[in-house]
Length: 377
Image 1 (cartoon, rainbow, N blue to C red):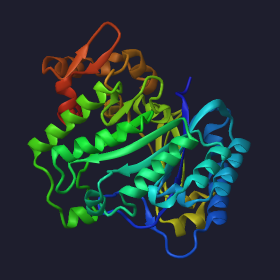
Image 2: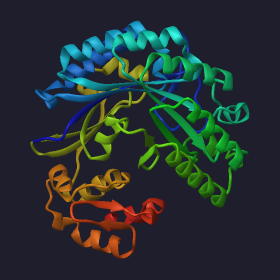
Image 3: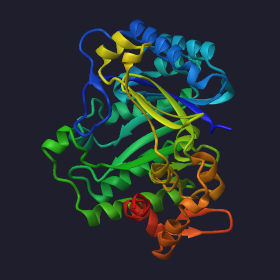
């Protein structure tokens, strides 16, 4: 049996490229080509259908870019087309990412009516100074208004926050956490700002908190959210009971996903193995080629010797770890393929092996890159 299948839809435009962002996002110049892009997505999906024929989609994630640039009518049209072409499980989680600078209450209500049942709001901070330093298009007032509108329209709301920001103090982070918790979101994603290659911040790095302060901030996030009743179930993810992100859990348990849209990535388990592929990145090229082989920028089968690290890079992000049987089912490899490396990681105190689970220890979570290096040998 193949793993569960999720669908990712990439909407690549944004108002302005944030200086820390290394995603495939492109500042919008001129009118948003909603209708043309929806047509391209449909051609893309139809072309991909033979690879997933008969499989049920367990979750849909509409990401970007800034998907909330698209109107509610466009999102409804997209979801109608998806339901027409694919069997989507009843009650499937359908998430849309939104930027507080591009939405209002009526648009959120429209997304909910269109079929979106989970909203992920990229707040990042409630402090005007830090939002300006991050190059965000919204200010604190817009962030508060967007969160209030999201809570009115959706039961399942995720707030994205960032820490270790330029000039940020521990007290400022704690204020952001307290503000976010005041809204009682179902889910919080809290990321440390990192300087990624090929970004404006990489070219001109801002002054960031030192490693010791960043570690104190991470500890403050974990402690404060645990006290508020959130489960720290993945490296950067915290949820109230029953509200873990099902779409991302499928990634972290090495499930399958089909990605459509400019620059979207796929990982599919086929008869001859696990395959990864990606679409062309630039929206103009994607619009011209979607639905044809020319839209596929890369496609390759994952070699058997690469499967252990591919699996571990995902599963060891989970606080609860994984069952050995899951490794065998997802990779098609016997447990003996990783047993020696598991033992080495356990001896170093990076993982704990229980009767039916392998999970990272607290030390292993803190030193995740060191832990993963063991599986690269």
